[in-house]
Length: 379
Image 1 (tube, helix red, strand yellow):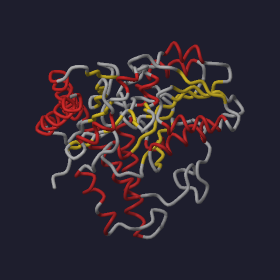
Image 2 (image 1 turned 60 degrees about the vertical axis):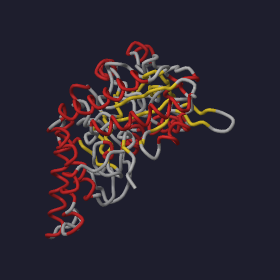
Image 3 (image 1 turned 30 degrees about the vertical axis):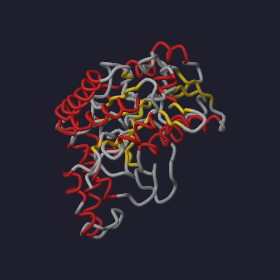
């Protein structure tokens, strides 16, 4: 049976061939504990050092500023709980946005139970945070601003450099969740001006279960996991060498051909959007038209239900829904709500996301399936 065309790269990416090749020795012969002083520990230890340099390379930072984690969710938790928590004596106010991933929003809500206060900044209809709204929300006790670099549903890229400048003026830590942007657009930390930046391995063609957190040198951070003191004492536990190697190689591959990869993803996405717009009426594209990820298409089909469309196209095309339709109600994503997408449009929203391996033939075949399905459902 032929597998569906994969257009859900924002959910997760397949492993890049170079990543698989780099990891193989650590499945076979290089099984040692990197903390061991004997010969079996030396290869894994050197591999972690190289991987740290590779991640630092795509971020434009120094290797000691890279902390390996279990993924983007842990990186966000560490940035907010450990680093933000270390500033508790200086203040308890955190600023974030209404379209953050739950890995940020739920952490912030948890911290409210610990005595922190939270301001959630709205976005406009294109999913953009206004720096002026952030500026207006800053208080004397504000200790951290956490705004995602690019939204996972709409693809809108936020003005992080402008917001970071505001944070610096007031001595506030600036964190950005860059899970969706690393490997698709430039994410050099000095250009963004951030103090902390989260990376998720499985969004950049590395394995699931590995990520990284950039922590600018000099930033005080609490211990996220206590134990034997790995990761410079910030995160204890024997290192996940296999997947750390995969993440490092994935970052090196992405950094080497960043614009070429972005251009390919953009061409595939635009081919999909142009085809949908030409063949169908009552189609709406969500998110900023220019300031967005090169691979993300959030599209609403007025009057239809996302789950029904996905069920029909599922055997042929893999994508994600922006709304879940139940027997008695429609559950619209918090991102579409924040962007004020009308319900008759929002309930029929799908997200298609292209990747490095997407082909023109796949886009054309996907278009045939999607267009014919939408037309049939509307009849």
